[in-house]
Image (cartoon, rainbow, N blue to C red):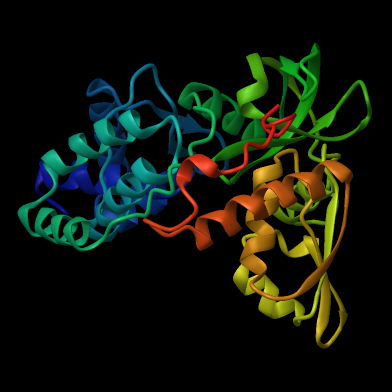
Length: 341
């Protein structure tokens, strides 16, 4: 029996935070007290600002609901350590949420017990992340939270959306999943006007607004939201077409490049194709260089022209020697054309 009032209150709060709903009988059994004591303790939690709701049913129950302010959370040792590590990781990987994650991490570390603070500090000191200098558009945490709640609650959302071509139009969608990839956030949703699935980049949304209209959830095409979005991104129209036929097994090429798996297709055990098509010519050149083997290329004229220019630059850099006949000022000038448009 938990007779110490503060200890019992903390234990009760911990139980309410681990499950959606508890019956009064279950809570009384867990704490070794009567149902009357549970009711008094629930009233004490409410006085402290915890929004504990009563539920109807055979014996009645309780659940911790959302309130106007976030009350203190109780985390066990493993939960606290995992949360601290996740926040530290978010600082390096969630573009646009670094400051928010650091504030939350500072608050958590301030109240960690010494033994856990030492463990978390050791982990932070022994690990780091690689910053490749590639940052996607900044993500508004408020927008991310709003859309996540709409996905969870099956609530229709409206927003203005700017397409790749720069045009803007209103959208009304049924949100289902959020997917993060390559520094970008995507929303997989069913567009009510088009009556079809669509993928929206969060950085192109303006003023997303819940409508309070709820919808029945739909089965996602392919059953795996991440795989569906990855496939759509891989096959989306791009400005420059470039497909290489490589004299290497598909698995070898997958290990050498960051290309999506769907873009690499085996022709036989020793040959495959890789779709390097992109909106950015330097990106195509980077992917082809990473192949590190012989290949043939089927590409748009703009791609081959850019690759010739890049090859000339590389050749010149490789053959230049200080004091030799070639000087840096003799490098051929090449028109940038529409390379960076």
